[in-house]
Length: 450
Ligand SMILES: Nc1ncnc2c1ncn2[C@@H]1O[C@H](COP(=O)(O)OP(=O)(O)O)[C@@H](O)[C@H]1O
Ligand SMILES: [Mg+2]
Figure 1 (tube, protein in one colour):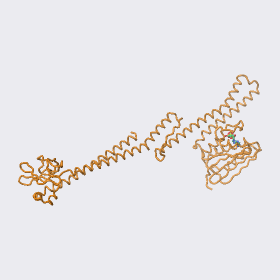
Figure 2 (spheres, protein in one colour):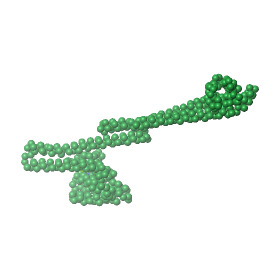
Figure 3 (cartoon, rainbow, N blue to C red):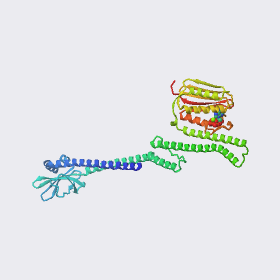
Figure 4 (cartoon, protein in one colour):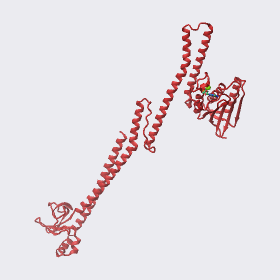
């Protein structure tokens, strides 16, 4: 059952129950007032002597006695069945009850009238002795008026409850149910488009649960769409990058098939180039695989790693590989971080490789591991060509290479560095002065407090 139908049923139930409760109140109140009227009738009937005396005095014209019984009709029913009025109420002098003959000793009953203004009366008939009966009747008009007034008041109260229920229902529908219906529609739309259309829903009130759901939905759809777009670009870029070496391989095999490679030297040269291109493809594929697995921080094996030691280690390797360069290491403070050591080495090695690749042979390279408050920063500085200011924001993008970078390289190195740092909850960046050198840095939270 839908929430809307449930709310509708609950509202209807509330209205029916309040209606019944109000009806019950009216009924109980009517019974109570009627019981009071009956008590008055019965007490008058029981006091026959007074009645007769009052009747006699009333006939004598005693106004005090008349006012005492001003509301009651008193009559005497004779053995022949004729009713003689002894006294009528002051306000309704013509009043006479319509007796059916079965009222004797029956207690107070409701009867119509044969005269007077009142339409219905409460009557009690009791023996007076000598086959005579006293008949006392009191108009029911006050009881009926009181009941009617109460019924009107309760009816109005019920209408107010109904109005409140309708307003609450409308409010809940507007702020709770309609946004959910819109959300369902939007979600269906997104599914129908295969997730390609990032449909957004209008969020009317972010303070409501429905509003928050709408916001969460919008964020989710936008994130999913961005992820899809990223994936699409990734595949396009990867395809584009792999096509170049493939074209070269195809070119050499076609050349060979056409008999274009005639002597030993030409074949050896072709083989060398084929091998170089295959290695390049291999590197690209390995880097791509790295990039995809790096997106998942759960693949990291996290341990305390001292980045001063790692920097010194990497410097030793670099000195062996590049003996003509001056490689300096500066460390400051406690540089232990919680990280996957292999991955961090991979990132720093990529930065060092770039420093080597994009600076003249023999120029100095500087490594620094520096503790600053709760963070550890590792810097790799070279005195190379630097990077133009306009290119700086893009160098960490996948496959991005500065136009003057030269032929070797896939443009994935810095993207891998950025992915490794982001998987560790760290950051990386670069400062560069074209013509005089670049400093790449990575920043991680320190494992210990200082
Ligand atoms: N130390 C550096 N000095 C100058 N340019 C650099 C340096 N490091 C990276 N770059 C530039 O950033 C680009 C992206 O680097 P990277 O992602 O490692 O790709 P690749 O080295 O394969 O070209 C490089 O092509 C180069 O133009
Ligand atoms: Mg590189």
